[in-house]
Length: 185
Image 1: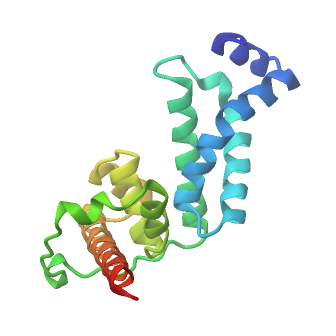
Image 2: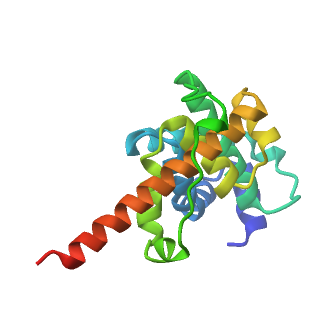
Image 3: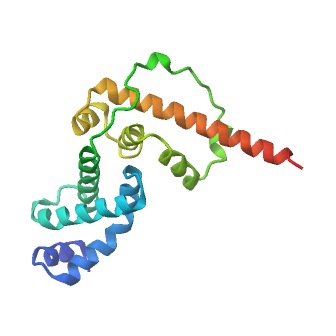
């Protein structure tokens, strides 16, 4: 089924087309939900809410850009609304001056797999993780993030810097653990 046929079927509320749309995009979008949610069950709820919005607003898709991009945007916005419902906490709103400079050798990153890195990102405090995901993974700028989360641009920058610093600490700690295991007889 082509994307056009799929869209037309969904707009005519054909169950088979709706099921196919969900089947095609749910896996990728669940990955997006997991980046923002605190746990798997919450991610599933976000995904369900997002697909309800997608089906209710499919007539608004104008074909400008990809369908997947349009769906991703709805999933991200649904994730952010979920965060706002949980009364988004602004962790550590201080300035950047409290973050020491940290230099990391490229070697440290080279030993991390994608799954390990995602697991480390999940350990970030919720506010830091949200800003990190929006900026680094989803490609929004600080002005857009500030508007989406109803925070100041400086807060977005600060939380991103703190998220990066925490990730560097996690990665260094993990690499030290690996070195110790190498010499552990």
